[in-house]
Length: 227
Figure 1 (spheres, rainbow, N blue to C red):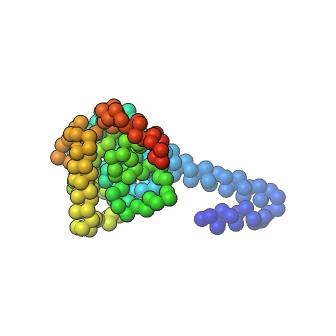
Figure 2 (figure 1 turned 120 degrees about the vertical axis):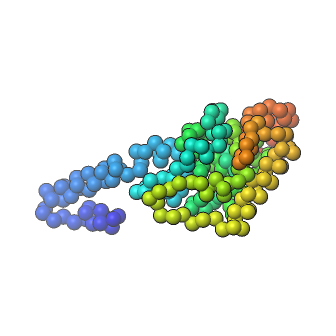
Figure 3 (figure 1 turned 90 degrees about the horizontal axis):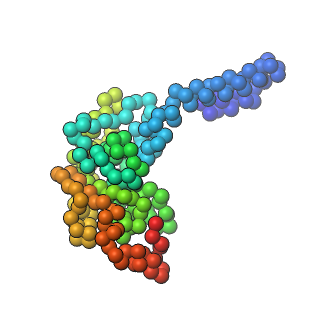
């Protein structure tokens, strides 16, 4: 398509008048593509997951989840960014996070437990799954998923090509990653503010207020400043 549009700019059939007509026809075509494409959709424009396969393949409807399967914690979250962990780095998965974002309408940060090179890269929306890094992040709420593969299994995507399922070993890795992070945070910060059979939720503003030495330790020489 890009090649065809480029040819429209270089051909001058019909003299000057024909060339001008081609230019305006090209602009009209681009405007039509923009108007009928995904860019005007609030979910696409304001969401945190426009690079997900489901958004790139915008000709098919995006995945959904029945209301009774959405964890209750996503309704009535405090204002401020939400940090989701663990996050799968493969764009065939992680559908539940954009479904949940449509409900809570907050900026989403993610935390990948593995398969992500961090050395020399400062990710804007990814936070290492460590207590200190989480508290330094701009997140207001942390949600740790204990059974992420189970949540993904219940996503409904009628009309879409079937997504590549998680392999059994990968499912186990993400389940263990969620359980391990939750246990680590309970030891460091105490019990979560909310919990159910699937998630553990911490109000990070409360945690920060409860750690009086946090501001001083984050400003120690050689350490990055608190954000």
